[in-house]
Image 1 (cartoon, helix red, strand yellow):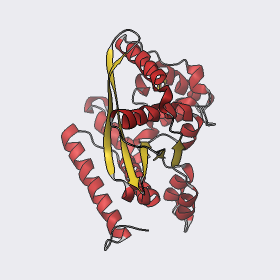
Image 2: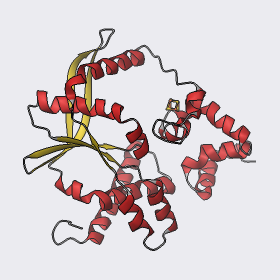
Image 3: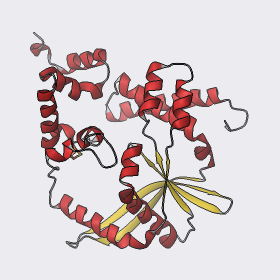
Image 4: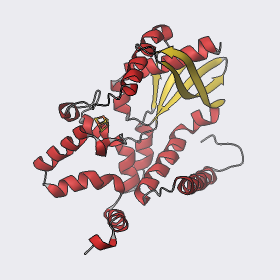
Length: 281
Ligand code: SF4
């Protein structure tokens, strides 16, 4: 591993753990939200695995968290809106590459590459035409840990994690082709109008039962599980209620809903904290 001079890999990972813990503590103090141990471990693993797999890209980044803004666009209904994005830039050997970090599943990105191409080409347009900078390539970094890596972290068998990391390919190249940016901005504008008109209807539950594009996994699992609005979404509730009927009833329903909140012990602790004393019996 080519890490900065006179710092070992173990020392770097120890520092990452320390920075991560400091961040979690300040977020807790600022927002008053505690993370369950399960979520905290998952997030830390994601950062550590990202470093182990992608340290060569991370060390080459010349401009990090570059904010790109395209102001002064008009929606179909005449509303003004701006588009903003944040990317990392690597400039070396007269070649400039733009990296965009995504937390989505690798298959979901590969299966919907056209949508990602549209978004990245808006950034390419801003970089090349508004900032007047050269751009040779664009790459998505997929930070979601694939199942074999997650399994290896759980099972901890010798060599398992190294093999899983070696097979993981989180870099997805995107063609640099910003000619159709006008159409993409129009589509964004149509979404702005929907938001401003309070048109928030979710897709029907049939959509949630169908595989998400590019995957074998239902949309309700692949996409909705990452959606903050899921517990107030009628389609998602219908999706998991139907699962409870074909599964093992109410306990299946509770398991499905609660599995985001850690292991059984943590869920019990959470239930006890959140249940008023008078209701505990
Ligand atoms: S849970 Fe979120 S992503 Fe899924 S249908 Fe509802 S609003 Fe859309």
